[in-house]
Image 1 (spheres, helix red, strand yellow):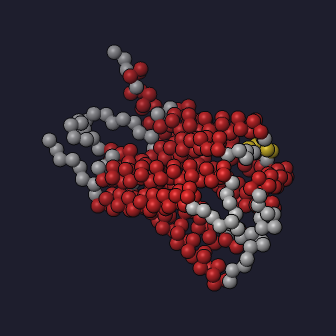
Image 2 (cartoon, rainbow, N blue to C red):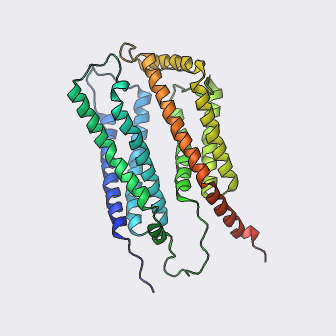
Image 3 (cartoon, rainbow, N blue to C red):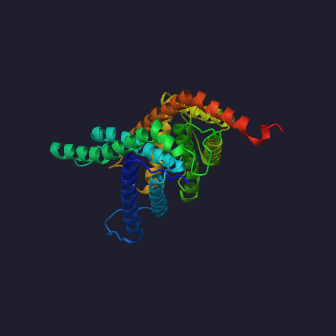
Length: 340
């Protein structure tokens, strides 16, 4: 019997960093969870609405579960489990994305400061910027490291090599390209956000081509999008050809809708109206956060979302031939197509 393969030092190092990162996330979320649940604020402090407090507790609880799964993933990396390699690629993509968003935010911090907020001295403002850059820079380095390491052919081969007792001559199962697998899991995770909708009574309008779809119609459209994201993500993992076209079509739809929204004058008017309603629901004074200020932030978020959506479309176009090749191989090797 052959000895089980040992993980190389680079994989073990990545696993150790993943364990430490997951433990830090678990500790941070646990402290936040119990602080939200049991800490009593002074009477003069602004209290969160009960619904937002409930949502924060749910999010912290979910993040605690994710951190535990991160520890399990890190341990599985040492044993060269391929599902753990895919999982760490997802984590690396998440780290890289949020860090890539956070670092520009640190440089543009003065533009995001409310106009009526107290002005910090220039030295203090620069210190805050460098602290934010450091906080986001470390996850960026880790995320890029994981993405490069676990996409290397030599490392990938060790995770996909046949195990003991399995003939190496047997044909290998067709595999979805790793970046598309990561994207599919992101689609599925996005769809699972549907569980938060019942806890958020203040409905966020759905914007299509700059026009708001309010009420039940907007909610129905949002639910339909979540269902398509989930079905498409599962279909991609199962190497279904139709799922690729479905997700590319959905991404293109939202990309075109977002671009059209930016050029539609009604979009900004609808955003101002929404922010006024949201401020009234949250009991936020307009003297500190004006609707116009919040609207600018929302438009900035829209632009950021369009950049991300465009990058996803580019990723789907680039990997389309490889996915279709894997899907064709999977279809040929399926039991239904085996002739007796």
